[in-house]
Image (cartoon, rainbow, N blue to C red; front, side, top):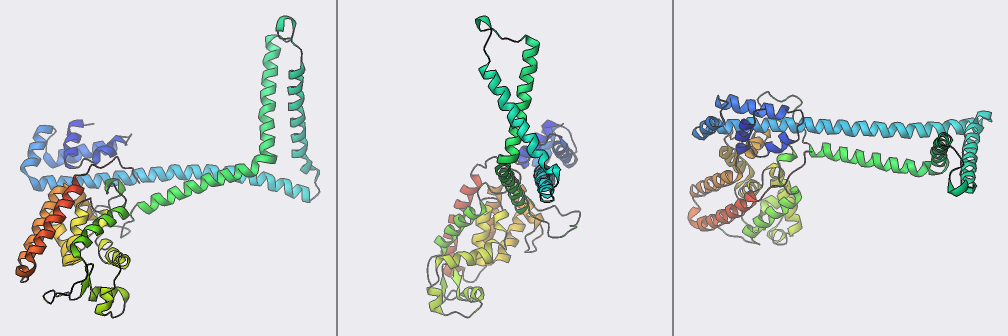
Length: 409
């Protein structure tokens, strides 16, 4: 494995190292080294670094290729984990089926009056009696002179084996007649936990939008490249920042949005409630309802939960202030992909492949350029500038936060 080339790849996409470390077959590492070799045309790590530093476009293309390799490796790891879950489920199901089958057979024989129904009871009785008889004999048996054993070593060995076999048989009898129900419940609980874990694993793995995506379209990134915090926590943190900038109720005649409260305009609230609302309805808007509006109209459509920390805040805040489409197109231009206003797997992969602080800086610059192009900049420009500065500062702090060792879904 070309470890020096892998080190070059790690400077572009640090998360790839965790996936390589967990790949026992070494296929991910080989693919990464080959991608670096093809992108730079050399096996020398120093020359590869120099080539990437001299050509940012080549470095960006390599980041995307590394992201695709990481996503494919994560998908294979998820499939292997699902296979292990399935094997364990099948084993436990087989054990439960055997127990149910034995009991059902005995019940049918007993109901039919068959003498064979007495077989399990007879065997169990003999095992229990034999176990206690031998145990009692050994306990009450006197030792020889000086405490020595009355049996020679060979006989003692046979006795030990017999007692061990009777002990195992006695445990099986107890489990069959007494402990079977509890054992079955325990096994059912294990099966339930495995099924729940498997369901969660599938729920966390994003499904492709189309059964057969184009060859040049990478699959949707999965959780090992996403935020170190839960998406819900990130949403609340970003929303707190947005609401602090939006403030409470206002109805500035120069604002084309008209009556606004917590950043929600009268038109937006009417669309959300599917009914025309009044200015007083806007004034009475609660934070809880505003939260759901932000989630439904901005956070989810712009797929902020799948963006790296810091970038998610920049995209959400600009989307709230200037519209989701404009915010998405700015993000796409900032990460070097086609600005079509539709955020999909390619945009997400590119956002994750780039350094978050660099993207945050480009988003802030692009946002200010948009504001300066507006006729109302003279009225609102100072407030917009302060908002961009505050958002950039918060986003930079989130982007610089260390990411923990994440688990592959």
